[in-house]
Length: 212
Image 1 (cartoon, rainbow, N blue to C red):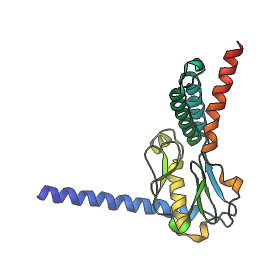
Image 2: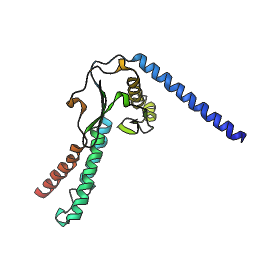
Image 3: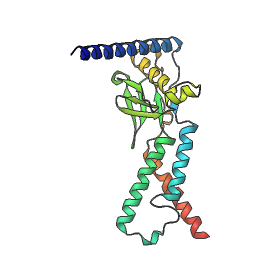
């Protein structure tokens, strides 16, 4: 029993220490921030775009509708399953190529499958950076960044941690939020249109193969 009490006390001490470190980190970040005039946008960088290009390439080469498949042999069920799988792959491509986070005067704008969703500032709760580099707002994944551990190993800033802290600060400090609303163009697109990209790439690949 005594060992359990010591373990529980040690665990609470570590949690308290982590909260203090997080508070100090947020306080230091808040001191460096100036009230933004325009909306703030974080979006996919070269790493995500490179992964998206690799994903698209393997989809064209090895996917359910790959360029070397004999499409004439497919039945209706085959077509349905393969097109559905390809569309889902397009959603993954959109998550890699087209994710973005836009903070403006009204809240945080996040692309979803069919629309760009706004989370008002008064509904923004916990924002955290996961170990894999994904920033999560109340269980909503916002965007993948370079994992913090990898960023530190490369001597780079842990952007995921910084973005999570920035959003947390803006959620609690009105003066540090952007003063204007983002335009529809600035908010970005939903992920659904990106489902067409693999279909177009596959159609082009099959046409090139047919012409040879």
